Each structure stands twice: as structure tokens, then as C-alpha cells.
Image 1 (cartoon, one colour):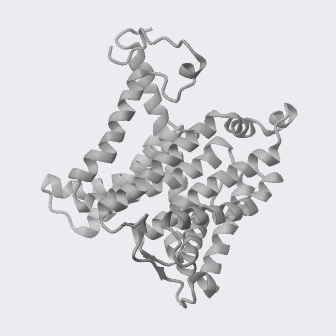
Image 2: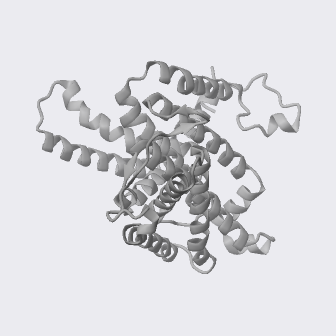
Image 3: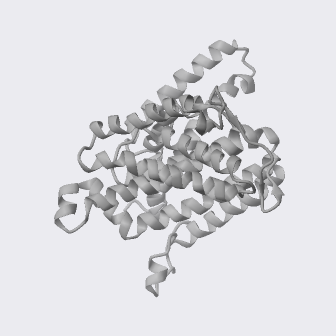
Length: 354
């Protein structure tokens, strides 16, 4: 009854094509943004910000970038961790080598460098696809792991490959406290989520989805596969590179190449699959599932007052977590976002059965 569209008339093309055409969705998003930008900084404890919310925001941004490539364009990638590493190390070099370089400019230039590398490793997608493309992008992961560990110029002559940043500020405002870091990451995520949503709703997004569904038919009707695939790699790598720079600068502060190893690539791919391929909202659901759920499972025995050995609790967390992944993929292969959209469709008809 409370999610009906009765009386909500579309009297112009603009109102019919808006991102949230249903009034209840616009109200919910406004409340969610108010909660994120106002209530959380005021009331959230430091542990919640440092351990959960900041990693969740940054990994949501990375999953958003990967979803553009895998979910909307259908190009499988196993090198997301590599593009995050390129963004992080490129931003570090701009920040360390250029005196007075603004933090935002360093992060965006790191994303631009990740774009160049992503397009370079995306060129094989013009000739191969499927698992063969996945192996080709996996080569990017191994190459960046080797380059950032062995080529000392990338790490400003650090023999171990470890780098660190300090004294971050934005327009003279220091980024030191967890609240400031949280708001900085949240601003990037909100901006790029809006950008991605508008891209996938536009002409380039329709080209990506046509390539994903059937590339031969898309080429027949005049869509250029070269342009569509490379733009998908470019946009995806840029967003992932910005996420990598934020992960290094804001979350870690000091990092080495192992912070962006192949485990990170698989983690982001799982986020996209579990959250929902081809869904902006699915990127957030997947990140919440991967980041928040293990922490909740670790804390459940303590909350229930059950004395459990730490090692046993860790193993139980892995077992339950893996079981839930299998359960979700069986119940809804299209991800949690599909369950969410199905629930919304049912609410629009409730309590009537038709």
C-alpha cells in the first residue's frame, strides 16, 4: 500500500526518464544520503568508521567499476587488483614527486594512469572473450605484482616495495580523523555512482549491454565493438584506479604490492557476482556482503554469550560464509540486487495477488 504509483503522473520526457521515477524511491534515497552524510559522522564510533564503513565505501567503488566492465559489457576480468595497484602507486608518485600536488588531483591522475593500463590490457578483448579474456587480464595482475616489487622507481626507491603517505589535506582541510576520511570516500563514491548510473542509462551504456548480450548482432546493427569494449575498459579502470588510490591513501596509509594481490581481484569479482551483475545497487550489496558479513559472523558467538575458541570461530566464519555464498547463488543466480528488485515489484502490487 505504501509503495504504489497511484497519482504519480509523468507529464514530460524529463520526468519519465529521471533516475528514480517513483516518489517513494526518491524519498528513500534522500533519507539514505542524509543518514550517510549527516547522521553517521555525528554518531558512528571510531571503530565502525575505520574497520567497516571506510573499507565498505572504497570496495563498493571498486566493485562499481568492475560491474561496468563485467556486468554491463560482459567482459570478464581477473585483473582488478592490478588496476587498483596502478591507481594507488601512480597517485603516490604524483603526490610524492610533484610539490604541492592536491590530494584530489593525485587520486584522479592515479585513476587516469589506471585507465591507460586498463585500455592496454583490454586490447585482447577485441579478439578473444570468455575464459581466454579472463586469463589475458590475469596477466595484468602478475605483471603489476612483479613491476611494483622489482622496479624501484615506482616506489620512490623503496627496496621492499612499501610506500607510505602522510599529511593529507583537501583545500587546506586536513584528512586525519576517521570522520574526515569517511566523508572524503563517501563524496567520491556518491559522485562516481551518479556518473556510472547516467552512463549505463545513456547511449554508451546501451552499446555496452548490446555487446554483452550478443556482440555479433550488435556489430550488425552498427555498434562498433572496438569502441564499446575499450570504453568499458577505460571507464572501469578509471573508477577502479581511483578506488585503489583511496584504499592506499585513506584506508591503509602505508602499503606494499601484496595489498593488491590476486586475492583482491577475486574478492571484487565475488562482490559483483553476489551483489548482482549489471546493477549499480548490486555493487553496494556485494560489498556489504563481503565486508560486513564476516565481521558479524565473527561477533555472533560473543553476542550470544557462547564461549568459542578464536581459531574455531574463524573456521566457522569461513564455513558459514561459504555456505551463504552457495545458498545465494542457488536461490538467485542474478544476485542480491535481483532479490531486491523482485521484492520491490511485489510491493507495488501488495496486497493484491495479480
